[in-house]
Length: 382
Ligand SMILES: *Cc1c(COP(=O)(O)O)cnc(C)c1O
Image (cartoon, rainbow, N blue to C red; front, side, top):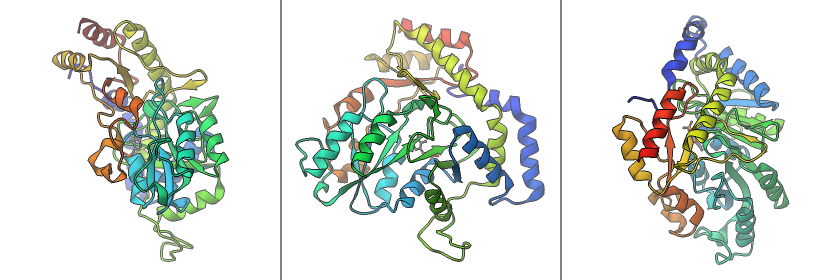
């Protein structure tokens, strides 16, 4: 490929010494499970986000799962979420026997629409699927919580989502897998709801060299439950089991890698913004560029544009060895694995419309202006 979709190599060159030093330290002390690097990373990231508790774990998916488990989510619980996200968001709900209740997105930021959230809650409370599309078992479930997603790095509208959830006695989880480093109203992503889950999958804004994730919360009781759930529901120790948990720990080696990468991270967030600004100025006449709402900063996990000519543009870019991707081609309510929910085509029209014309361009902090001009010209010509 002429231009990499994400460039982990350029980043690695900048911190190669620190990386090998950190990894060597782990090899020397040998505490591969819950070693000192794990706790150092938790302290540093909690401080960066500005919340009192950070609980590291094995993936972004497990971070979401642990957050729901900490609220004792189970059968009978309706968890409102978006159909336009990576499958993990809905998967953890279903895994616990609870029911994902989908809410359509806003056209501008692709995140959960608070007005539709309110309508969906009312429809569920009134057992009225004519008021808003509901899952097949709507008569058996009650509003319990919300998982909003900060899609492509832009925080959702938590000011309104938190207020609506509070009115109905529900908790809010921020799926910040794509938004670590983003901001809203001067506050950092991962600190915008009751509890937040992020991912350090290699392609995320702060990515490691493998799977891992983190849960953030200002609620100390919840943090204690999360730490117990992370290690098989431990009480005094892992042979005293006070609840059902998982094996959800982050490897010490992964924490050592992330500590080295975190030194570059604040600068990388700034560089991503610069790259996004350049795309916006080069592409304004050819595709619909992403909009970030006033008061928000995106972490730019993806740079996703809209065009009715998506296939043609993607083909031309591929011919010039420029990779693109479609996030997400099939909304979750139309996935065969989720057919049991009984949703159908037309239930979430905004999401379905956007899924038909969205695609993502190469995005990373080390993308050069020349490469961006080249990409923009191929798109213009197409
Ligand atoms: C990546 C992602 C996850 C899952 O994170 P993993 O670390 O891959 O388990 C969850 N939600 C969203 C929105 C994601 O993008």
